Amino acid sequence: MSQAYWNGSHSGGKQFKELEKEFQSSLSLNKITVVRVDGHLFSKLTKNTCVKPYDKHFAESMRVASESVMKETGAMFFITHSDETSFVFAPVKSKHSLYNLRVNKIITLISGLMSTVFTLKFNELKPESIGWLKLHPSYFDARVFQLKHTGSIVEYMKWRQEDCKRNGHHGVAKKHFSQKQLTGLNAQGLNELVCDKMGIEYGWESYPKDYKYGFLQYYTRSRVVSLTYKTIEGDMREFVGDVLRRRMKTITIDFSSMKSFNFLFELF
Ligand SMILES: Nc1nc2c(ncn2[C@@H]2O[C@H](COP(=O)(O)OP(=O)(O)OP(=O)(O)O)[C@@H](O)[C@H]2O)c(=O)[nH]1
Ligand SMILES: [Mg+2]
Image (cartoon, rainbow, N blue to C red):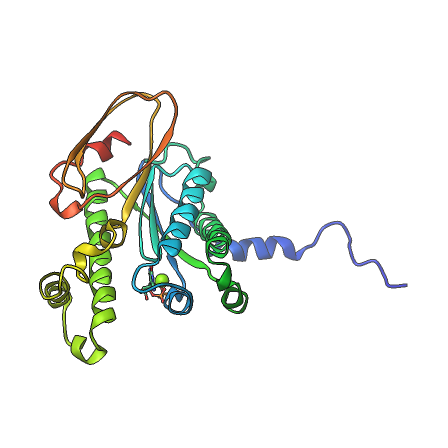
């Protein structure tokens, strides 16, 4: 019979906890928090399982996974395009919120949840992808940072949308032009190629707005909400009235042509 090894207190435990602490950090109070997740090596996943350059099932899987993270974590809203989503959290008031503000917890739990829900949804919408997924599990990286001012959020979202447009142009261009023809083209060159030089049928305008601009999903609050903004379709839409319960809304905004961001600040 083997000798019992447990003596009630492991003297090494304290030492290992100290080692763990070396790589632990916490977020600050009273700042806006942004967590961005991005699919790890999703070029391979999409190349082998998705319609090019835009696959509505892939986009829906991203939306559903992002929504589940928003519900679980209490993020105020998220923006998403391609294989990435940015979650925006209101200034943190208590150190007991958002996984006690522990960076390791935040990025691992959010990327874990995103990966699980994305895989389930993707497999449900594209059952034929199961063979690929079993050999190459799909999962996300995550990073977190904080901002002092609400204005910086707008700048951040504009930046991500530029990325969305550039990737979108590239995706459309790749479908119609050889790599040789695209070599050396910068973002502006790609933009001109896709928006000006191609027929309307195959051109930029014919692609879904989610692909071209990404989209934003948020909760309306249980108070009077008055939002006015220019939609991608060009019309002014207004939501005014008492909203008695939290409702999820999905909208698409062209940040580059947007004049007022008041509705975003209403969310804070
Ligand atoms: N076919 C297809 N590809 C898509 C779609 N959405 C995103 N992608 C692809 O997803 C990839 C995302 O690019 P990145 O995140 O830069 O590259 P990655 O391979 O994920 O690499 P890392 O993020 O660095 O791990 C690009 O290759 C896009 O073309 C889609 O709807 N259809
Ligand atoms: Mg990626």
